Length: 367
Image (cartoon, rainbow, N blue to C red; front, side, top):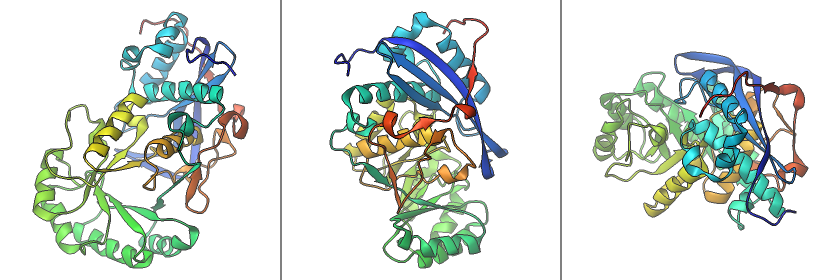
């Protein structure tokens, strides 16, 4: 294996994929029957390849698929810029967060392969070979309760329930029923996706039993009122979208939050992600890595990050089953409540060529 830590890029390619989903994915402003994303393939001077998933989520990510595809092709079509990609953090910060994340993942794969370890153990030699995952509850109320009642037997330590689509009082009633179905030992996480105003969130807190859930992600439309909500109700709140909101330079406020839910596709490269990990560690805030419905490739990369940087809490990575098929084989599926990181990607997995359409730029564009 090559001993140098320096990467010289000898080849750079971009691909598009489109995966059908089992059920339409809810996105802001509607739903999606397929998941569109892109794969970046970087090859170093010794022929070692690394792959990164670039999967902005419409209505959630700041960037849209069309401009993202163009940016991927622009990078690929400019060999004079490849050295800046491999070595220049400043250059990478000019790219969309999803593209930056995909590039960093591909480079980390190359470095890990040189060392003969997983990406997780490249980042942290003590990283475990698998991460605990929270189950994602979905469907009708009856279906949700049926799922919840069987999770403990399947090895899960935590479950996540999305709320905010009905009246706060009805959500509080459902949370109580799910709490009872889960039993006392399992964590219950809630996600309101900024559905409520301060008054509605307060009504929810008055109806839900204290201690019935571990935290609620992003309950308010107006993020600036989160401090007021926590001080008024004492509800355990976690931040998610706020971490990647460009208008919020310091979203942690002055009160204590329970967790930071980190979605790497939204946050950008490894440097940004490590900065949030450091902030959370300093403030004794829990760290939960989470998927944005990336392909199996992106899911595996996030699992490696979770194992390396935040192995203590179950990650939000129970999303692979949302797709009818995947670009990665074998598919990284949850087993007994855990997702394996893959000891060595190049030996354990391969990309399904039939799912990838190579993107070729018709012209070189300055970056």
